[in-house]
Every structure is written in C-alpha cells, then in structure tokens.
Amino acid sequence: MENIKIDLYKAKNATKLSEKSTFENFNSTDKELKKNLEEIREDLGKFQDKLYAHGKYGVLVCLQGMDTSGKDSLIREVFKDFNVRGVQVHSFKVPTELELKHDYLWRHYIALPARGKFSVFNRTHYENVLVTKVHPSYILGENIPGVDSVSDINEAFWENRYRQINDFERHIAENGTLIFKFFLHLSKEEQRQRLLRRLRLKEKNWKFSPGDLKERKLWDKYQECYEEAINKTSQPHAPWFVIPADNKKAARVIVASILLESLKKHKDIAEPELEEKIKAKLESFKQELEKETE
View 1: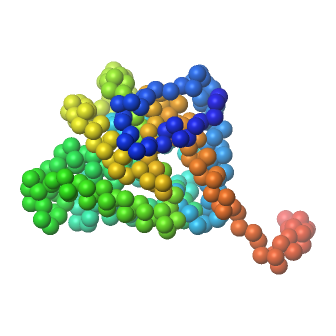
View 2: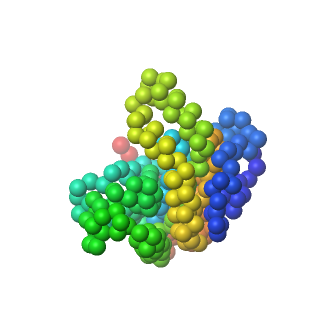
View 3: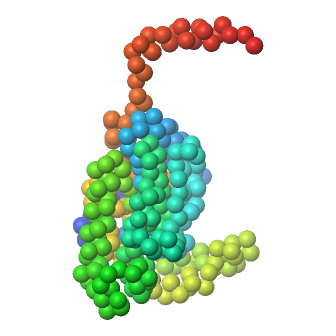
C-alpha cells in the first residue's frame, strides 16, 4: 500500500468540508488495509513503551465526528497493541451536576494524559462549540455570569470560546502534551446506511437512539459548526486532520499512520540511559542471577 501523505489530511486555512472526500481505500482490499493497520499499530505500541520510559511527554488524541462516524471502533482497533496502562479513553457525555459546577474545560483538563501516557478523548472539549452552538440553550445550564438567556449567547461569546480553547491547547502543548485532533468526515448517505444497520440487526439495536434522527435533521448546521471550529482552532501545536470516514478500515490506517509518523519526528523521545556505574556491573548482575538455583 502507498505511504500516507499526512499533509493531505491536515486542515489548512479556510478548510471547506464540502470539498473534502469522505471515502478512501488506497486501491487496497479490506484484507490489505487490515494487515497494514496491524503493522502500524505494532510500531505504535512499541513507541508507547518508549514514551513511557522517556517520561516527558503525554499524547492527547481527540476524536470528533457525527454519530456513527466510527470513533469507538477506531479506538478499539488503533490502540489494540498498547499496554493497557499506557492509554486511557475518556468518553464525554452530557455534563454531570459536578461538572456543571466548574467551567466547561475542567472535566477535560483533569482527563489529560500523564507524562508517558496517551489519553484518547472520544468526543472532546469541542462539544462546547458544536452541540452547544447547534443547541445554545444548553449553555444556560453552565450558570455563566452575564448569560441569563439565549439572547446573551452572541457571536462574541463563541469567539471567546474559540480563544479559550486555543489558549488551553497552547498551554498544555507548551508543558509537554502532544496534541492530535481528528475529525471523522462522514457522508450523510453513509450515516443513513449505518443507522439503518443498527435498526436491522438485532445485536446492534442497543446502539440506536431516536435522538440520532433528530440530530440528523440538523446535519447542515453541524457541518457548518465543525467547519468553523476546525478553521478557528487548527494550530501548528494542535493541528486538525480531516479523515475520510465512509470506509472505516481506511480511516483507521490514516489515523494510525498520522500518529506514528508525527510522533517519530520527536527524536528526543528515547529510553533513558542507565547510570554508568550500573552499566559497568551489568555482566556481574547477570552472572549473579544465572548462578541462582531453585
């Protein structure tokens, strides 16, 4: 399979989602794509061991996309070869009562990766400029000073949110968090087929919610909000990647490739060297163990 050209997926200025493809297969069969992913994720798993030993960086992987875009299965397949202690997945639902007593970034801040680990956000802090922008009444539940009605939620409010999110990401990047943001770009027709599959297959029924159809009717508004958020917050230290998501197997290969190739550029990430006095005694330590008897 051809090498993934990362820059093809990186969001540039004035990204237009309507001009971005939602399908890719690299002229490969499903079997070939699966094999390619297995090779990449094995290397990712080895890199995670090195990241942990190095202990100076954390990696934040943000996944956004419309319902059925494949976030859950992507997480399962891409991170399959990781040490389970080296990666944590956080799925952000409707804010809890406790979370609403804090600012909207609080629950995301406390879920950030420790040094040496990966955190995967399945839906992210961007929900606060996506679902809340489509449904601005949700903002009222945050009890923000000066926001007493939907009429108080104007364009200046959203611009402040984009600024706050950019500041948040800049802060964590400057303190050792490597940030990757992936938008799983799904076509409306493919979503229809995936929702139908949930209804037709009994074992998939549990995934369906009538709310999915209500949100689907707001498709165009969501696409507009995603496009604006991507354009206002894609930065060199926290880039957005627009991933064609109609073919799940190809989407996983693209995301895994971007992660691996980007992380490998950090040449300072390496296993620490043993102290010279310990290295000098390695042979004696080995002999001591080899002489032990049960």
